[in-house]
Image (cartoon, rainbow over all chains, first blue to last red; front, side, top):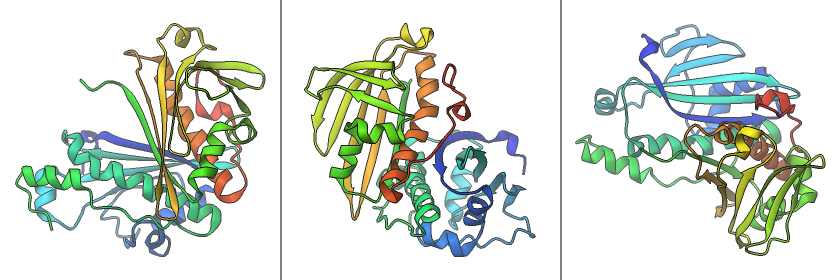
Length: 155
Length: 155
């Protein structure tokens, strides 16, 4: 995949009292991700490299982020998510960038913009306190309506 | 064209009352906001100033004070010469209970095109709010070296 065509659409930065290695582990292992990512497990074998576009532990990780939803990928294209992990004094700066290979409306992007702050706030709490946050999210209504208007069936 | 605006959302395991206190008292702000004090009596229309290590960095006026829900003030940076020439902007904090958590939404808007201030606050707010979240959840604020934020004139 040529990632040069992708442009950042959403960026979220958070600072965590942790080490780059621990943040990396939390981002790449199912055991951790299930706790903060709305119950979703990251279950990609790093060795396969299929969905991992760039993998430079513990600094930079770029993954394609595709929902198992073929109609959506066909119309909206793949989503590229990059995590950058930088040591900053005694803490870590984690920057998440969501990028796309075509322009998408704010309505479509609102789904991710609603989700990322919750996911990354919970990741921070998990690493700092040992407990993730319990965040109940309403369905991303604005995005779902935009998808409907585009003729994309929603589950 | 959408107006330039900064938006940041984070979820914090605390109560709206404690978060409100942290956002409005110098005793707290000194700990998570790079040793910044909040100088104001919080009456609507009263002057407002941010004083970092004894130096006034930003001034404004209290616009809304509705504990523990909504806080807003105008924000005019006075330290850097480039930003001092820009018109005052507006900061709004919204606190919403979210299950056992509080959803904190910060908007900062009203920037001129090519604003130097927008560049600076976009790097500053995520660090300040991450430190605030840590302080409320763990009792310890983050120690982030100012120079790591890469903001002109902030070292």
